[in-house]
Image 1: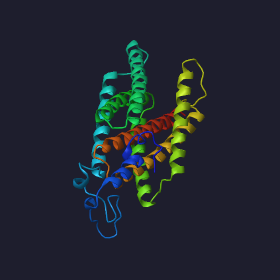
Image 2 (image 1 turned 60 degrees about the vertical axis):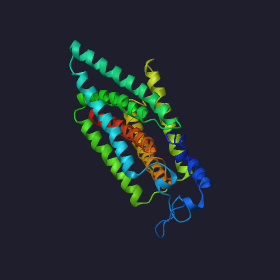
Image 3 (image 1 turned 90 degrees about the horizontal axis):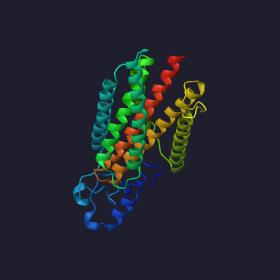
Image 4 (image 1 turned 45 degrees about the horizontal axis):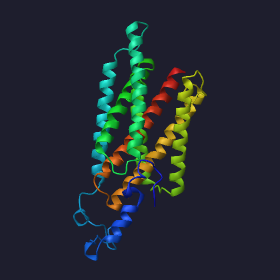
Length: 286
């Protein structure tokens, strides 16, 4: 079953082509004997071991490790950016210059990060270097926006962090406990909604340079609604991410695909954090 998610669709492992190809080329001697009651992708009796099909295979542990490394680098980059910017509050020239610097880093980091995200999404063979480069650049944008929001809306950063962690933990728990099944229709709907959301956000951003806009990225009621929708979309994307990881492990994907999974999870976590930040800022502003 082929994935519709742009992060995973270029990977033969995640869209199912690698699994079918591998199954079609192995000899009977390559099938491993699984434990009673198991039905893996390695053959009629169980999954093939890494040594039988060549190379290390993706595991939940490897995904966790790569995701931790990617998020750790992003947080470190954000922390450095936060410290470099300096104070942005006040009416003095220094504060105004720091605020301009923060805005430049925010916009520049977001745009470059978007470009790297597209490169990672449509690259057939995942590149760990590009994934880590995305983490660094996106960390700059996250650090800048966090510094500005925390300055003008005290306490929102901690709230957004807690909210993001709660959303992740809650979604993972629901996914496992409720045994959520991801169908093709669900997958296509979430991806279409995601692209539509991003397109509207970018349109509003471009229009803002011409003194126009329709409040999509604003701090009014409509902005609050769009951010709530953004969090819901982020949770749905987390479900897709968890499903893709499970499918990769079941398919015996190469270990390098842990980086693709880490990238997808990082993109979604940052998405949820930014929307949480906006929601808290809007509520605090009111």
